[in-house]
Structures are given as C-alpha cells and as structure tokens.
Amino acid sequence: MDLSGLGGLLGVSSPWTIVDVQVKHNVKVIDVFIDYTSGSKFHCKSCGKLTKVYDSSYKRVRHLDLFDYRCYLNIKTPRLDCDLDGVKVAHVDKWTRKGSHFSIKFESLIMRFCKEMPMSAVSRELGEPDSNLWRTFHYLVDHHILDSFDFKEVKRVCVDETAIKRGHNYVSIFTDYDTGAVLFVTEGRKKEVFSLFYGWLWDKGGHPGNIELFSMDMSKSYQAGQKENFAGAYVVFDRFHIKKGLNKAVNSVRKEEVKGVEELKKTKFIWLKNEKNLTEKQKYLLDGFLDDSSLNTAKAYLLKSGFDELWKVQHLAIEPLIHAWVKKAISLELKPIIQFAKSVIKNIDGIVKSITTGITNALSEGLNSVMQLARARARGYRNTTNFSKIIYFLGNPDYHTF
Image 1 (spheres, rainbow, N blue to C red):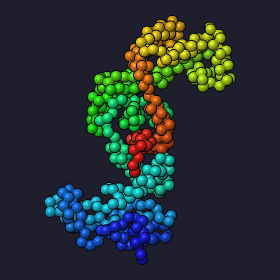
Image 2 (image 1 turned 90 degrees about the vertical axis):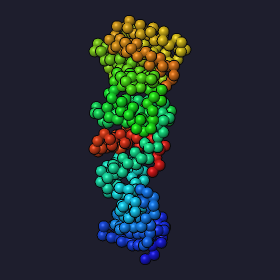
Image 3 (image 1 turned 180 degrees about the horizontal axis):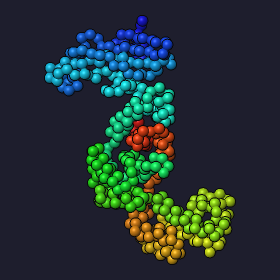
C-alpha cells in the first residue's frame, strides 16, 4: 500500500515513517502506525546529548477523524540509553504532548468545540469521557492562556463576583482594567480572595506593590481584603454597584408604600430604569406618579435622579454636593434611603474617586455575557475549578493559541 499520501497529510518526515494502516470496518476505526527508522538517535531531554535508542513501545492517541472513521495514531516511543542520565522514556514525536491521550490537533478541536457548546455536548460529539476532556481543557488553559500573561504590567484591577448557579456558591473575578484580561478567578467573595490574589501575583511573576487601583463594589469584605493586602492601592467604587444599592433602596420604599397605594403594584422597573430607556407608556405613568408630591416613592426617585447628576459636576464641587445630597436624603426619613445615605458617607472617598476618575467596572460587567456562557459551558461540571477555567477561557479570547 502506498502510504506517502497519508504521510503527507500527517506531516510524517524523517526519521519518522508510516509502517502500517489497519482499517476496522466493523467498529469504524483506523489505526495508523508511525515508526522511526532503524538506527535513529534522539536528543536526551535532560542533557541534550544525541543518544541511541535502548528499547521502545507504542503509544496510541486519538487523532482527527478520517472519512467518518475514528483515527488513532500508534506512535513508537523510544527509551534512550544516555551515558549521563541512564535509561529514560523520550517524548520525541511532533504529534502529541507528553501525557496526553490525544494528538495536538485533536486537542485543538476540543478547544474549538468548547467555544460553542457545553463540555457534556463535546463529550457526546466526540465520544470521549468528559473527565478526559476536562483534563485536557485545564492543561491548555493553564499553559496557553495563563502562562501568556505578563503579570508585571498589571497596575489597575477590577474585582467583581458572580454566582456559579442562581443562589449558589460565588466566585470572585479579578480583571486587568487596561487590557480586559481575566487574571484570577477564585471561589468565594470574602476578604480572603484578596490574599489569594496577592499570592497568585507573586507566583506568576507579578508584584503586588505595582497595583495602583482597585475598582470594585462597596462590599465590606472586599474593602477589608484590599486594605490588608494592597494598602498602597486606592479604591474606586464602581458606579454600577453604587447605583444598584440606591435602586435597591428606592424599590424598598416602593414595596413598603404599595401596601397602601394599589397603583404602585407592578411598577418596579419604572422607578429603576433610566428614563431614556422607558417606553412612552412607562414615561406617562412615571410623570403621573411624580405629579403626586405626597408619594414617598416619587420623593426617593427624585433623590435618585439627583444622585446621578453628581457624575456631571465640576470635581471641586463633588464632595460638598455629596454632603448636601446626604443631608436631603436623611431629611426624607425613609429608612432604606437613610441606610444608603450612611453608606455613602462611610465610603465617600471611593465614591469621589469614582466620579473624578471616571473608572468603572464596565469591563468586568461586560463579562456578564461571558458568565452566562460559562454557566452553560460548565453544565454538568464536577467542581468550581471547572467553572473557573471556563471563565479564563471565554474571558480571554485574545490568548487562544491552540
């Protein structure tokens, strides 16, 4: 049988040669046997010396399918008899990486599928156990994505959290503000996640002292973690999370008032959405409510609108205007609003920096769609590590070099 055509497709060249092809039609499997020519020598991986072969055995790895048949490469793997390092198995072929059950091209196929479907679906499509696929996925994410980062250049970091499942465990995500790269993902949302990020930076060749800024929410645990581990960095509280806290307070006022004002039922999003995003019908309803100056919900809403205007004022006027806003908020004597106003005073430095710098967690928030994909891709995941690796993978598309 002339095997030169197949050899060309597989990139077989000296000292390698295809010695046999076995086709098993009953199970739709093709086995390709690749050998090295007799008398070949290979470089010892330890010392680099050109060394003769001591003995050998075949390793069998899954390759890309051929004509709807599963294709396996059976590659003769030598043990070298090195004068300096003794007898050792040598990984010298170009079709596989050491320790993998798959060829390099098949691993690339796995990663392409992982962009489009959950691992369980990849498992069904390829007919491989998902445990083997996850093992390959973890290795490639670690060595082709995370090892590609230059952590020495990281200076500004966004920190956010996401639930693995609705109402279930959380992971904290650290993102490079300047590049958008997902740097670190870890389970939990307590202060310890900053300690873990601190160690991660050292391990990856970065320097915690280079971090100048964290953009994050007003979580007490996040603030404690930042102060303990990155005291030299300043904090910017993300505008989205600040507004989220105020929206929650406004809605709490509405939920209390709706008990006596039937018309406020099912109006939640009228009060929480930006006015420019309201439909004409919603704008009409909102105008009608605002005409009633006795409604506490309307008062809270107008206060919320005033808070949004703080991002438009001159920098020197920001802090005095925040204090004036807090004074007015407290005067309304609405408990949810008072609680929010107190948190504003407590976190005023980070809020002022949010307004003056214009820095937000927009990059991190932009990962929300990635997070939704990650939950789908990790469907049937066995642990949080799988979910985290999916985030690294989907959150760093510029580093896909498989």
